Length: 266
Image 1 (tube, rainbow, N blue to C red):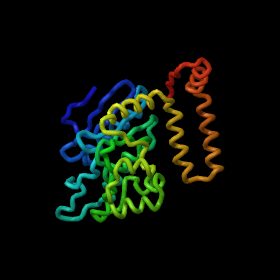
Image 2: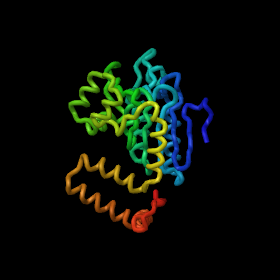
Image 3: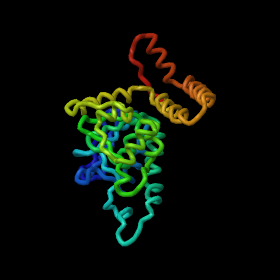
Image 4: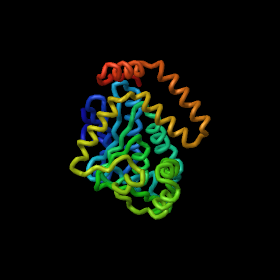
């Protein structure tokens, strides 16, 4: 089912895959208060819906997301300064934390430019698939601001300190092919194959054991900042939990009988 085109966020459902499509193409899907609220609301609903097993984040038109809409009264300087910290705390912090804690795998389908907070939201997804004509831009310095929406956390983890500094201080456009080469994203796909590749990868993720994938994300995020001993303890705790779950028994049975598994846990 697809919401009306007038909505700032379109919800498209195909089987167990839910696509949330930013729908402000005339503004390159720039984020405002209405769009942020709608996105958080639908992510929360997806997290609570056991029939959803993969969430795809995409953009309508020729862009993925140009970042914060600078015409938004909440951030436009206008007659006086605005408390941008409050905007980041109220809008983007909940979105980032929700994406990073989804109980199902998330996939960003970047079909065009992903800039500023838009790039951050894409990079917070578990996998990023980008059209070859797409690009990533850290645009904060151009308006005398620092990276936000979790960019300072995720970017050096993906590409290292030197490249993260180059991307944020210089603000140069990074083509999707280079983004793949430096480890910023999972894969760059030729334009004509992009939609089919997104659909195939989303379906593949939806068929995987959702709880195990979510725990894997948690362990990798925590392991980057912790010690080896902490990682070993966390792995043992996760294996204990998953070993008692139905998906483990199903996976072993499917392997033994040489059939495709039917995972159901979330």
